[in-house]
Length: 466
Image (cartoon, rainbow, N blue to C red):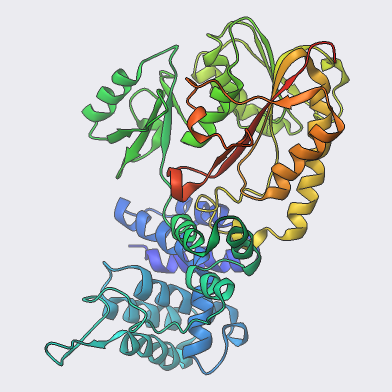
């Protein structure tokens, strides 16, 4: 029987050598034959250890004789797995976490250092023990909620470093959020991004209604909940198995799309018979929503510069039985044939993804302020170009799944300053997007407030004759 902890070690070793976490995890999953519970454990250990890397390194720094950066890389990975189980996995008994981690060290070339592994993990357990004031006896963390008095992780007073170490984020991201929403909400946001992501479905209203999909899923033992303000959205609850095997998938009744991404389609509000362009369409969630809202009547151009990613758009359109979508491979900064041709344009711009950090465990460590600066330049170039595609009186929606003002407000404001014929248009009061609109007219979805991915979007209207 294969060992999920050993497989987690192999995946994490690849991550620490430069692989993407999802790619490394898929590789070991495909080569294994694990039970469903062991697959869940493996997935949790890999994604959790990557997310919590800074916190785990800080624990090694404080508990070990050598700092995390001075440890042999594979031993550091093994220590991460042990500490992650002790600190974040309440269902795993501390003794099991220690013993299995010591065994990992033995099996992966560190037989001579098993005492170090055992000692460091047991020191963590000792430091979590607190004395009950009533009885005078000690109890372990597994019986007592983690508190500042029983936490072995010593934290600095500085709020940036405190939140960064405790919740495992780089300082620059914590600083960004502190500037926008303050310390209390930044902590809530950090906690939200460390949860496992939910899966939302968007019902294809041309093939089914929400009641039909609810009933079919319920009959298959899959629990769902509706999402306020969104008439076609369902959130899956608990375990559901392979998405492709759920009722209605092959029939095209629904597609997977986070609720905040669904808001983009409602903000664009494309109408039957119109000519609409999705400038950065792959993998096609928003493209297909646009076509559904148009009743599959009219034309939706799905553009992307990567043909392999556009294949996913085509597959989704076919499964959902949508015929109005046309595929075009090309860089949207250089498609002059679209000038003054579209009733509506969607620019779902390439971005840093800081609103979806829970979905990509390693993204917080890969993005940098330099990345954001480069993306901001690209976003400005794309916006300027796709605006030329819109007919006078037409609509342009700009959207990103990031929470960085440099990629959002700081892209839109210069565009408006240099293009006086354009103005922000708030969604109508009856639009599902209306409840998320700020006084400035744009929409900002904060995950910890709205319980969905972080998003920014704004609807721009071009004046007739300007």
